[in-house]
Image 1 (cartoon, rainbow, N blue to C red):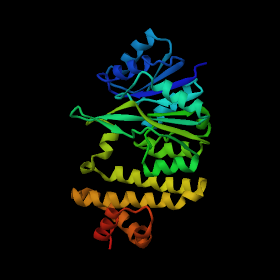
Image 2 (image 1 turned 135 degrees about the vertical axis):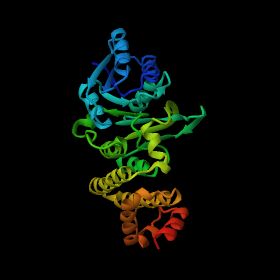
Image 3 (image 1 turned 30 degrees about the horizontal axis):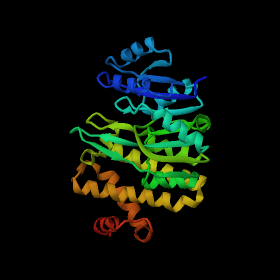
Image 4 (image 1 turned 180 degrees about the vertical axis):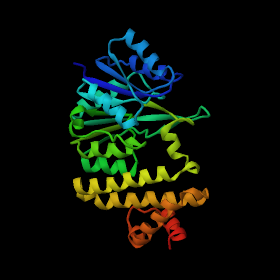
Length: 312
């Protein structure tokens, strides 16, 4: 049985998927299986994966009807044989020692989850650091979830992380919605015993117009569906963390309010007239919690200025 299972979902990325596949096959750590889930592609992405599978028996390709990212990742989890799980996106790539680094980081620290740093290549070709740091961080569940919320050393993105497979025994990605990582990753950390993080840049994110994560950060294109999905995910996260890690209840609630005021500011800045319904909801919620948000120890000065401008 392989030690690590690498799971990659692909959809209509025939010009990019080879780079991702070849970066996995070039790993210095060779004891892995590679599950590629063709999520109903209408181009040659699935055929490209099949061609690589014919040359390397560590690759298994699953062809399925179009579904959301979460359901595709669940299909990969169901087929994975490794003791550890990691994810790569089909438009990204890795350093050759990506698996070696994450595996040794987990084993040497007896950690359930290990995390590396990354780089982000944006549309003009510039490469920017993303969570690059030298120190070794060892976090229990509370500290790890705190990091997920505050995003100082790592965030909710599934890539860059190696998970013991047993963490997934009772957890699966949502089969609804578009933004899977933010709805799932905090649960994995909340159910972990120890996380080891060291920000060595072993993974490369690619950001472009057709990138799902990139679209979520282009706030001038916000729409009610995206906002409502995020609001629902944040509400669920607050409730889950409050029940599972009650010491973090106040932080989780603050994070929900922080997201709201951030989106209120974006809607006003870009004059997004199509977002009236979620805007009214967020203003209503923030008005009820106005004093609590202003007095929270995590609230930043710019957030205080926003809430005073838009809510008072």
